[in-house]
Image (cartoon, rainbow, N blue to C red):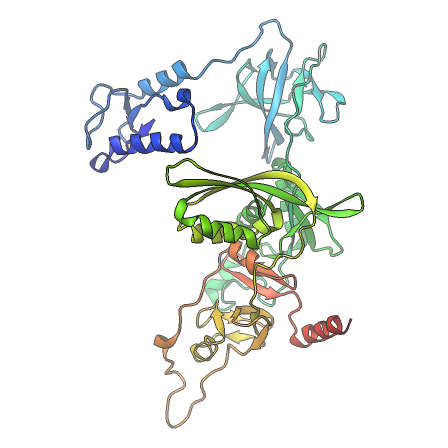
Length: 500
């Protein structure tokens, strides 16, 4: 379907040709390329099979009926046996504050009714009889209560607290399991705990009446964080939450860095203040040797960016398995790369390909440990005292590296304020003020000489931090800090590690 939302700027023929080119680049077969085209204007709510002129809307239709008719004529109806017993496949999970865990089902055979007793066939093959306490069907964008669902219907049921994706609901008299849907094992873990920085509960600046109002509903306790993680487990099957030695921190495992970053971002917007540890891979022992998860990464890029992608994957221990060039100006490459090598990969990938590259990865299994990965060669600039950042100090420090903070930003001892141009960390005084003399005013800072600071997103901050660093996440700010804030304690720890 070609959606035409802005008639004055429509380019119907060009967009259709681009769609054909895309299918050709993806090696589509003849049946896939011969797709039907529906010309529609969503703003006016009309659709037609006849192409209108550029800048106009379809004239031979006053509704979206041609669009829905095309779906009915090209999408095959479900095939089923009217005499077959009930078989319903759990394809996804959701959560509700009142109903608890909700299983999204596709009814393959038979009929499912509200209040019905069915056999729940679990992943390990065991069975249990359960009752469907609530049956919901989707109407438009909302779920509404229903009495029954038949073959081909997608419905939601409640009343089974521990049901998982891939399991089957079947007829109690003739329980037949459907093929299991496997969920990839967690590959990346990070520690999520309460905020322990000196600015906890103080908002963005920690000053003023407006700031007190902003932090009124802030969630900073361990109980609130644990309750939120437990609620996430109800509908997110790819997540695992494990206890740690600390009562205010938990190890959260997920499929990838992006999935965990999305969880943290959701919690941040809900008012949580968190401390996030550096992402780590979930390893396992095979025959006494450490194995780590690996991904099969498929990359489609224009030919001119092939070298940049190859170099980027080489640094991350990626092994090229296949490369194909179909003469269309695009190259498809397949790599096997350790999962920890993909931490922070997408940001550099989009930068290196000028936003034109397409990358997709799937879990490939586990392989022996690939060795040390070095994705960051520079050290950190660490604030050595609390205070407000001054333009005078920034002017003197910007020659030492790249700064992350603006003038006036509240900092504390142990907070990372920039990236050092050298490999080691450097403690700096970024709150230093220009002294008042009879020659110049202390407030006459030269803002023109300050290089604009580099702003890091949550994903970039997680990529940047090292093993002795963590990320402080609040609704207003994302900061990077040392795990040990005191400069002298860090120095003693480094000295002991050096002599050991």
